[in-house]
Image 1 (cartoon, rainbow, N blue to C red):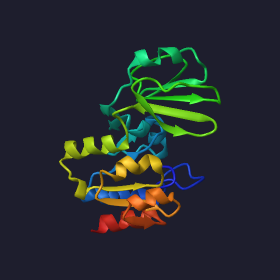
Image 2: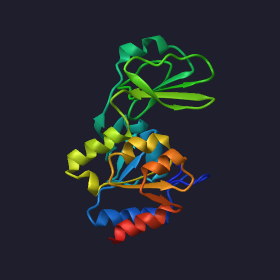
Image 3: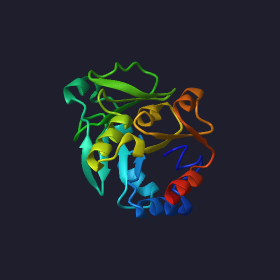
Image 4: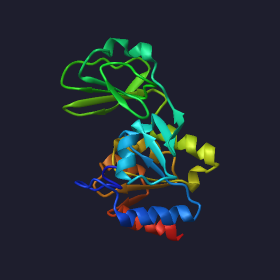
Length: 209
């Protein structure tokens, strides 16, 4: 999503990219959005487009037409020591709770510079000066893509993936055609067989094949 479908400063997917996506889908090509953002936020960004797969929480769950069809829940017992901490957020497919466990937790995020031990059975998928995020050990964008391939009977060679950063590498490994943005880190570029400046052009080319 960020850095690919959405350029810096944009809040919604452009009408022209939306048209390209609709053209792709009209040719019986399945389309998925992979993002660490929450589903409700993605739904708003895409202006409520339906019949699109949303891969949320870095592969923690997949929601299709408002229905959870795939998820990797984190064991709540491993999160008990993080409860009642106002700097910790527990992410379920449709909502986020602050400091207390609620629903099926697919991602945990912690804010601030304090020490947070990695919850058992999870791994860290994001870190910066303000935030850390964890998902289940067997979750991720790559696993989510693999699930969709099995569900839709699509092979690796029939799969194209777009991304721009390290958290997209698992997804790239499950795709025969791998498109990364020109600004991507060198390690990401080495994994890809296409480097692009404009995702809209590439989507149009795929739709034209």
